[in-house]
Image 1 (cartoon, rainbow, N blue to C red):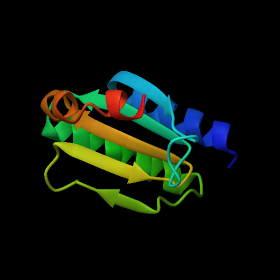
Image 2: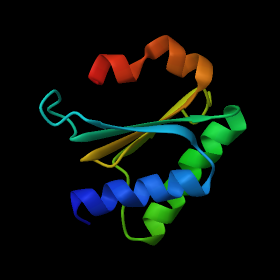
Image 3: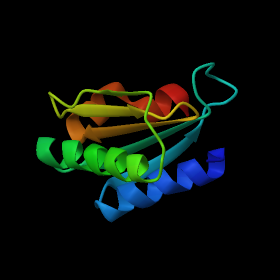
Image 4: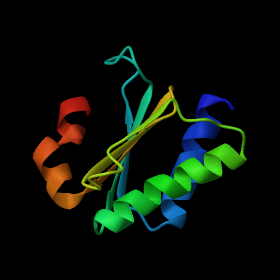
Amino acid sequence: MEHEQLKQFVIDKVEDMKGRDLIDLDVAEKSSITDTMLVCSGNSKRHVVSIAEKVVMEAKLAGITPLSIEGQDSGEWVLVDFGDVILHVMQDEARDFYQLEKLWG
């Protein structure tokens, strides 16, 4: 799947699961590990984990295998790495604390 298609696929799945405050960060010039970081918020630990699980499940059904998934146990911050696109699903407290938008924006 091409980069823009993959990014839109992930965005659509996050929106299906009512992920909030989705931000699309182009980090191609700033990072050697990825081109796009998508950051969104979930309402609770369960919601954060559910958003990430839905994206992973739908991706696998579409023949896309994530390189890694981190943070499912805590539910504060789940990272799903698709290579060119990395999804961060965070609770508001974690998002406020780490401020990825400022770090990478």
